[in-house]
Length: 558
Image 1: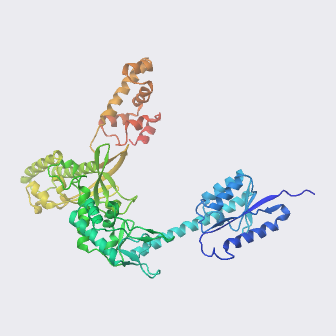
Image 2: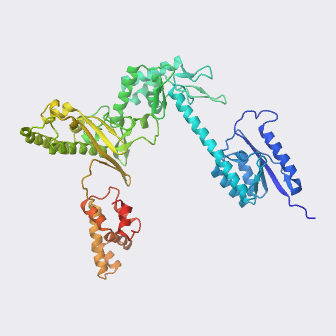
Image 3: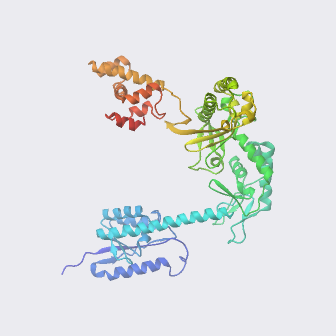
């Protein structure tokens, strides 16, 4: 009679929370006892329990970064374990993807996996299938629970409840742990009011920071779970800016991009809050190192659309800028990106491109209205010629003048993912055309145009309205040169000879010469300037072109 092969068994236990772990007999002990009894029942098969314990208490099954589990995996890789025994499969992991990786790692080390409360193991294909099904439900349960928690937090904040996090300066948690409200800390509230007052006086974060340091204003003192104290230090510019933008001081609760009335008492009055927010917006428009807007400064560096545009959520677009390689780059961004951190739905558009696109839409609208006799509310043949001339002269000035005259006509604009809607100031438009607001057709002051955003390398190209032909001179010239090289190759000249004559490398000539074999429709678009904005020379030469012309047209969107 042959003796069965010894199978070295390790028990792994886990509990998600710390509750009850300090008891003499806790959940981990109960799991281990059940697993040990199962191993003892399989003694006749050669199963032997190893003395080493692998217990993870208070750790979630959504990650594999658990100390005991990592020790278990290390011992499996070292060949010291033949069988892993758990009470339930979700004790090992709740993630289907993690489970697949674990099973693959077990198989590489010739190690099996058994659940004592579920009658299957990974030594058979049916067992692995059943495990995958159960783990799919476990992962689904975890994801649904997470969604439910997120929805509960959103609903609670909508009711004005404080749902935890770092308590801001000026407030404390409610003494009753079951009450989700903030209570005003009188001493800290005086510091908050003083910071708002200082900014209302100076309108400069640097000066406010210096004044706060002189007056001894400090950050909130906090006690950590281990009893150590933090905070109580001079406030930095970043801390002050975050504080000045925090709607909690207006008695509101923010959840992502939305703000709801809170149940807590406000610290800052409406008038002071509004004044500070307006000065923060004005400061964002000023160039760094400048105290005021410089009247004589080039208008091309001013944000002429400030306060006039909103995104599809109703959030106002705020001007901002950055410096790169000595150049000042301007943008319009959704205000929530300034005060609320990253948001995938937020807008970030290059300011010069956006301003050009909006100006072109405005000018095209006025020209089209004049051409179709839609300027006047009551068209009059005797006035049409004069009105058309006034519109032509006015649009000509708008297209050539880099000043804010065209932006002054805009009352409000709204951007969506595929269109832009603009409302014009009827009084200012009528004054510019030498008419009265009553003379203008109602539709003249409302513009709706398509809006497309295209990535072109690191540049975002904004296309509003019907795009005019815009030939790419570099791409166009390269196409013409490619035809010359193709003719020379067909005439029998060697590639190396042509490259030497042109002063380029053979690889350069080889990749550019293929432009001569583009589909006729694509070549015509390049010559006429109607090609898609993202169709660049780099995109055309970074891969081999399909031989089929229809496939080329689909690939490059022509």
